[in-house]
Image (cartoon, rainbow, N blue to C red; front, side, top):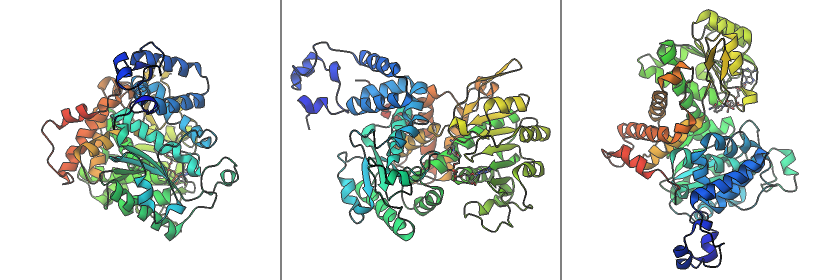
Length: 535
Ligand code: NAD
């Protein structure tokens, strides 16, 4: 199809706006439709950046960038690529949280697919209406657990859109292959149901067998309509997130970033930490504050990583304990969730502070959503046990972190190996500058997705997640490790993603998941295939 005239100017994928040359203007019927000056893409970027930076509110910057994405995709992605540290918090957390809360009121034009309860029995047809036929990557949410904001119903669509933007910017996946989807099965959020502007289904959530049947039809429809697509589940509430992953991970190409991506990025940080404390993963004991899908997902992958180092599963599990809002999770508890049960400790019930004294962990990981629950006395107790304890405060956003970077370094007298889920600035303590690493899932999922797409892998297994983690840990320069930083700079993300893609594909090949052997020059192929938004 050859686009001409206004059709070309309103198509964000092909639109070059004022950068269309005079010859192109003549060839495509654009003469007279544009101001006479021909801009370069650099000039267009500078113009957009000036407008963007003139805005003071983050949400206005987000809306400006979204509009740019719908107007000129290549300028949008070049701005992201060349300013990733500035843009990441605008197109994803934390700004995307507010964008979701205000999604309905700011709604301008549709993007992606909305599949709701009324579409049951007809989901494949609805997906078939998406104009791009070569979809390779889908991010789907049901909006029930959007970031730390809870049930946002169909307003949660900002998350699949934002996540796919990161796949494209960080790994170089072609936006033409990406499809964001909201499955709208109602919401328990009363304020939304009575909001006159809300665009989703104004009913309570469909649950139980009806939900499972709907999701079964949806997953089958994805396979039928987009047989090559990787389906990424995103921001489902923990019980559904775990159930969907368990049900489909061996049946179709799927992945849950909240569980598996988090686990892989945390493992990468812990592997980098072993370069500081000189231990192996299987030498260490881990205590978690939080026992939801993020924490137990990390726990399960740690168990696999420890087994690979030669210890038994039983031994590995005995080196992990979990706490939730009621304290240490022990076998004598009346009600244990299915995902926490395999980690229940053979200890009497006690609170987290007592558990720390009793269990003597090398590593304390917060994934609770509760700010401040890693206390000074806990950090001091850790330091009394180990020379270089690791403290990961993973809860997002920054205000929810279980402790701050400054607290971790000060309370430990500079001994803590610290990482967080959201960014913290560098900390000066007793003449040393500590650079806290951010265990951002964006280090893992884009490269993982790229490796899967380019290799044609048909499944994602734990070994692939471990390979991604090992690769990421190896990308951290010694100078960064010396400053206490467990992750590479975000500015390296595209090259890091390319390396992860290669590592993941090689592991998929070993698992027998590839339709054909990897070409000898697969690493070059990955780099050649990375989406380049330059005109
Ligand atoms: P979840 O709601 O399923 O789990 C939260 C858990 O914390 C529950 O087990 C709850 O009982 C427990 N908890 C609550 N109060 C507690 C307390 N005072 N002490 C100990 N435990 C307590 O949520 P989730 O999906 O598992 O996510 C948890 C957190 O992890 C979120 O804050 C999220 O921001 C963070 N997270 C970070 C990353 C990352 O940094 N890469 C990725 C995913 C999730």
